[in-house]
Amino acid sequence: MVAQRGSRPARVTPRSSVGGARMATPLTPIEFARCACRVYADREAVVAGPRRRILAFSKRKVTMDEMVWIARVSKLAEGIPIAAQVEGVELVVLKCKGTIAVFQEVCPHQGTLLAGGSVDNGVLVCSGHGWRFDCVSGQKADAPSVCLKRFSTCIEADRVGVQRTEVHEWKQRVQQDTPSASHLQGRSLKHLPGPNGLPLVGNLLQLDVKQLHTILERWANKYGPIYTFKIATKPVVAIADPDLIHEVLRHRPETYRRLSSIAPVFTEMGMNGVFSAEGAHWHRQRRVAMHALNTSHLCQFYPTLAKVTARL
Image (cartoon, rainbow, N blue to C red; front, side, top):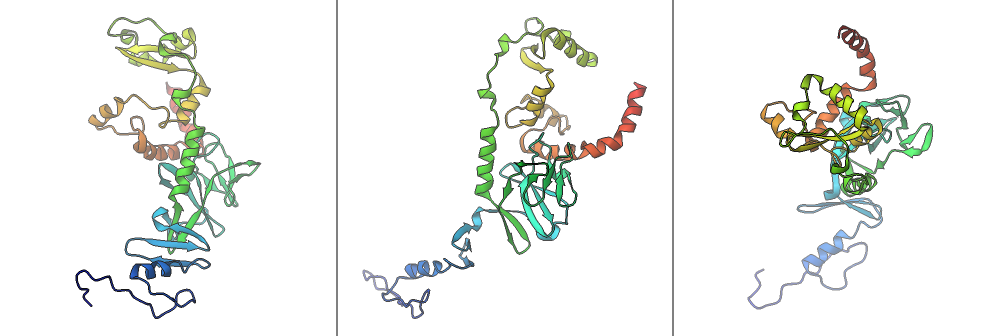
């Protein structure tokens, strides 16, 4: 049917009922489609559209655009944790006793990645210092008040997904709990102690690459656990306090990072690695380094390390 110019659009009266009630008044095609899409209030349904699907669980709707698929069910082995990342948040996916769970991957103890751990009788064991978490609830075995964040999961066919909004909210919460360098109270660089230098070169002439560790240790004994020196005109802060070093390493690269000039230099030299990487590249490199330096590997390597050290 072709509508004449200036005439009103034709209205369509559906002959079938929607939701058990026959339509009493004529509807436009758009109104009819909207009514049809509402018939999922008290049941599970998947409504398909041209570019979007709506997944309804009972009366709660979760758009498929909000889901992020992070693993495949067929690839999950019983008791073998695997890593995933969403919105820059590290996640660990775990299948244990037929249940698939997704937790935060960073251990609340000292930030070890839990995907490098193992599962022992329904308990996820951190490879760093042996903290044990229940594979279903995420609670610490000997301290239930300490609990991993468990994310809501969606399993569709062979895919495992999490809600992007939930991960984003968790990321914001972690960032709020993480101390920011701009909010830390302390002394400015000009008030930190340190060795006197020369104009333009700073303390560069006092540094010997072969004896750098002994020089920095000597300065720490003289000026304290936090001091500053200059490489040419660039100020450098040296830290010799183990607790503060741990905090710096745990909250990098979001709060603390290396000199911005290091990464381009290493890249130009073709030496991309964990010691020069930052941001997303650092996160990928960190996973490899954490797996190589976990406690079990170090225990196996210790006899060789002791033998080599004895030769020095």
